[in-house]
Amino acid sequence: MERPVKLGLLGLGTVGSGVYRILQENHEIICKRAGTEFEIAKILVRDLQKPRGVEIDPRKLTTSIADILEDPEISVVIELMGGLEPAYQYILAALERGKHVVTANKAVIAAHGARLIRLAASKGVDLCYEGSVGGGIPIIKPIRESLVGNRIEEIMGIVNGTTNYILTRMTQEKIAFSDALKQAQALGYAEADPAADIEGYDAANKLVILASLAFQTPISLQQVYYEGIDQVTLEDISFAQHLGYTIKLLAIAKRKPGGAEARVHPTFIPNEHPLASVNGVFNAVFVRGDAVGELMFYGRGAGDLPTGSAVAADIVDVLRNRLCGSHHRVETLWQPIPVEPVENVRTRYYIRLHAEDKPGVLAQIAASFGAEGVSIESMIQQGRGQDQPVPIVFITHEVEERQMRASLARISTLAVVKDIASVIRVEGVMS
Image (cartoon, rainbow, N blue to C red; front, side):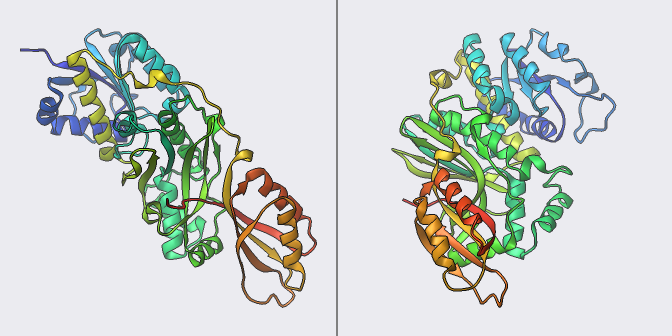
């Protein structure tokens, strides 16, 4: 009888425990689907004495990475430690030793994916990372395999559950950002230090992965413009609803003539767009291909079992490929393409400012927009100021970012304008 394939697991935290549970509880059916038996031979942990949420033979636990990397019988390494280091060095070492690697580490793949993919190809092994974006949502494999007959033109996604939960609570319950954040922290959806989520960094890492795959080019985090949701107010949400929009933190990548654009920011999206109805901690990725048209992938974007489900699927792929002596080669076709700086990006804008309520004010503001080639699609002014500045809201036609910045700089110098309170990009016109 064929000997079981031996796996090494790095990390036994939330996701690691979820993967272990899935592999143990569904062992028989996973083996049948993979076409081979397998076993977890060693598990790297920081503390051997720490209580576990799953029952594990203590002889499988180790604090030494050498027990996994230097064991020639362990042919598959599953990295679920998180963070950039030492996870990157461990993945690198495993691939260099000819071991297949499965990971859910978005930071490592975003920062070093191109190098690791080339290394895996040169060693004839697999590097799989479905769990790095969207938790349990299948998105990497569809782009990698199911959509290879397409030229992918656009990806637009809600890829951070924390920010989506906060914006959902603000929209549905009319509570301020700070209160919605406290709710998210109390429920365990946000970390004590939520900066990576609310500032857009987490979503930017995930966009690097998606855009690199979709456009077959090595995009870096430095090429992605990103901003967070901490400046979104209830007033902005109210105006969005009045205008027929919902505010979401979107990760957006678009193919352009001779290049691409990649950005993460709060976005007005029309209520009829499928992403507008994605609420709470759920994630969704909207994809547009030249052949397939518009697709949306939706589901739970984090958690032990959803992410564990994606990792388990990658393990089955590796075991199947190993059995027939093949491995993924699609990404070795990557070619560098330019990524547009955000100043060159064209989109529509929502602008909310406060100005004096008297004759001639709108004419001055309109002239400042017009001087930089910014065209206004719609405008709202509510109420009389009674010697107090009043809010004025504009939605523009599509315009370059540099033109918008120049027009806002002009407007900010007008004596009749108290402040420019909010600038949010507008996306999502359905074809």
